[in-house]
Amino acid sequence: MFYIISGTNRPNSRSFEIAKLVKPLYEKNFSKVEIINLEDLNLNQLQNSHYGDSPKPPEVSSAIEKLDASQGLLVVCPEYNGSMPGALKYFIDFWSYPKTFEYRPVGFIGLGGQFGGLRPVEHLQQVFGYRNSFILPNRVFIQNVWSVLKDGKIENETINQLLKEQAEKFSLFIKGLEQQKLSANFL
Ligand SMILES: Cc1cc2nc3c(=O)[nH]c(=O)nc-3n(C[C@H](O)[C@H](O)[C@H](O)COP(=O)(O)O)c2cc1C
Image 1 (tube, rainbow, N blue to C red):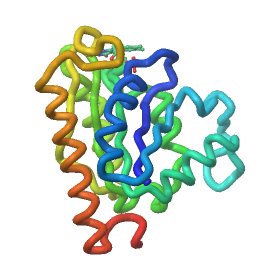
Image 2: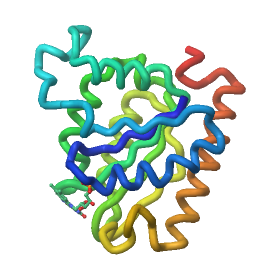
Image 3: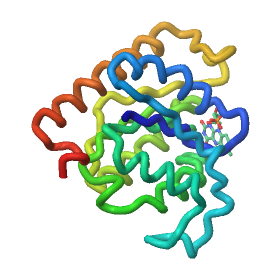
Image 4: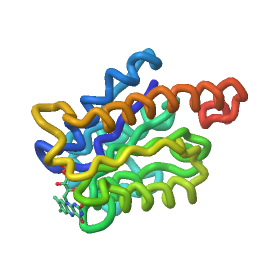
């Protein structure tokens, strides 16, 4: 199972459009691919009492259980005020360590203005690096996303090629780790 996290709960987000757009690239190599859209998780129902092992709203628990068993996950992350959306970090802060993170293969697509989401992706790399995940070296940054994403398609051949290459490399990355029984589900 491979998961794509659409990294914001903003309605009609471009992140969700991009998650839908790359999903078929992953379906070529993984038998089941699913998008976890933060918009569907009712993060406003999460309260401080839900941290740790205490019960969480069912859709949040279910999403975390899926991630805990995932072969890999791809985070599509927009830039909000020079970093990742607070909603994404809030969601991540309800995951468990080491289960959700450690040796989990993780990849990133950034989107934003001039820097294409470089900053939030690098912040995420710090978070996942700190939590001992395996980070895919191939990152894709979509600059001025509002001018290249039209009607659910990216009108830029270089970016489309980079997304395709990222999906291919991600599959090889996971297969290599699985062959050596190194990725999270083998711990
Ligand atoms: C709250 C907010 C803050 C933003 N801050 C930045 C920013 O600091 N740098 C940037 O390049 N773009 C910024 N943007 C533009 C977004 O990266 C861009 O609109 C992107 O499409 C948003 O992703 P989304 O459609 O998935 O929400 C911001 C957008 C929002 C909604």
